[in-house]
Length: 346
Image (cartoon, rainbow, N blue to C red; front, side, top):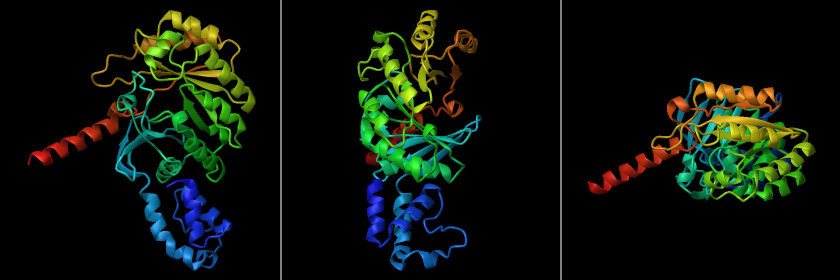
């Protein structure tokens, strides 16, 4: 079910444009579909055929992203494991300060070596309406003023659906354009499409190293774009929309936290309209990578800050519940498979 399907279904029920707009906006705010404006008699406003169709439509929309489990963390974030209509699962995260991070794919084809999501490969795309439904679930729990397309999946590999969701969230859902953040490993299609949109989101680039050969190793199926060119492409878009590029850097002990990388960052970021987000690695059971020591992270931030690179530490939400991106889904899938094997053996 896509956003266009929702509008067509309302039209088939007899809803005019003004009815469709009110119903969709009520849903996007996490409210009941029949919610009307103040001092407005909903029964007098909506046609009878529309009112009769709303219960089934409400049920179908609720099936788009059903909460299987919630996992609150000490930092105020809450990880949600969500069931999609076909039984697949994705994760989204309620972030502190009124944000939500949503998934754009079930699995991911990029295969980043430090990411649990990439280990499963790409299973299917998430529809535009399923993305928006993740935001709706978040808004039913707390205010949402920022949406980050940085959960499971590579948004550029599902670009049409992602851009459709961004358009709706930036218009009917009243989310500021710079508070819609699209993350990518660097697909050129992103840089071609974003400048043409009426809703121009902020952009986050998954860089992780200044070394081209190491980046190919860490992100084995990402497009081959040098770190220098990637930052140049991001810089052009940043100047167009007048908000900085966010550069994502997962800190891996002994891999990309050395002094040589820091000095290369200074050269790479010189004159760029960009912010560096350091994400200390969220250790996964059985993984070869580790996060740097706390003092090393502090030293890195101080070094870069003192030399003019705006640097922030973004800890992955849900670490104390072993809820890094993809971990909840992986454990749930393992549990489902174990139960199936047990049933077959009976």
